[in-house]
Length: 158
Image 1 (tube, rainbow, N blue to C red):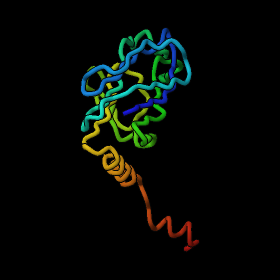
Image 2: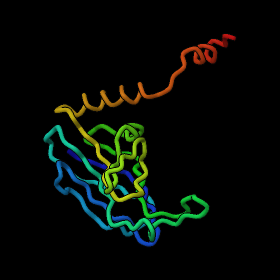
Image 3: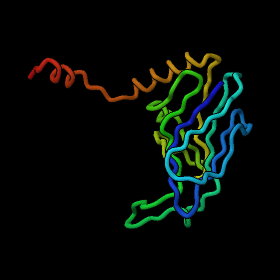
Image 4: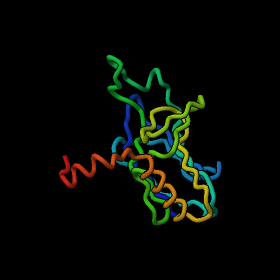
């Protein structure tokens, strides 16, 4: 299966180091050397289910993040914009998956990888398209939706 990961690379005191694992086996690895957009492409075996991991490593939090007044000014990090696996594309669905830091802290609903650790996409089905539809259903159900406000807005009911 062809996998494409569209990222934005942020550089501060050097560039992020990335490796991508499929079922704990490295399928792509690189020390990044350019800031900005980066499209990562690689093949993964068509053996589902499986876990795709995007691993950020080698960052020193004291040296590789500039903080002023409790705000991050500059950072060594990776932003996941979208991930395509075969003919499906994950964009908003990325917020359904967790990032697990090297200290096992779980960061949910985040596509910004600013810590050392692993962003994990668990494809827990033998059928990629069924898995994708199930995740879209989870995404839809996670949205706050107020039917009464919707009726007022659409039908101008007061």
